[in-house]
Image (cartoon, rainbow, N blue to C red; front, side, top):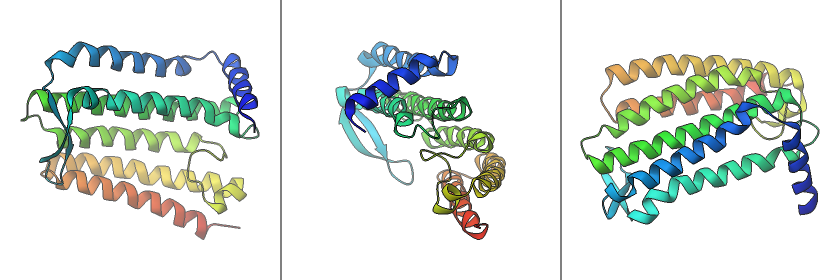
Length: 226
């Protein structure tokens, strides 16, 4: 597809939509930019931006780069999320697709906004329990994903996209229902991990369980191929 055709398709698609979940990303991005600018002067000149397995800082950036890195990433993701549906007119122009699609995009933006807040809190106070905070954010994201997946129709952009789900609508639906059940189970177990286990082990178990369910979704689609 030519660039002009892509831009035109995105514009036509946007003009047909007038839902709050399309305006929400703008509000999230605006809120993050305003809040980052408001807090900018209080940040140290050299910020911690990366942590090791045990939560020890092992990466630093100057204040300008560290403060605005995540907002820039969020803007780029939002721009990409806007353009992607124009690449698949067959599956990605219906409201049945756009509603879960933008719900997913909004959830990712909220997750990154929360990460920005957590990173700032650590730089304000090194005693801030960043790993525990990240764990709770992941619990909420996994639970949200478990609720969302069954609503995702067959498409080429997001979901459990394997050769077997993309080739068969029934395999797509049963795979997403099965994966969603697993994600909801992981979310419940992750709450227990957060309460019972010390960090970083709670976060490790959450991530391993999450990735395990995604791998199971791929295997399930293969087992149930037709």
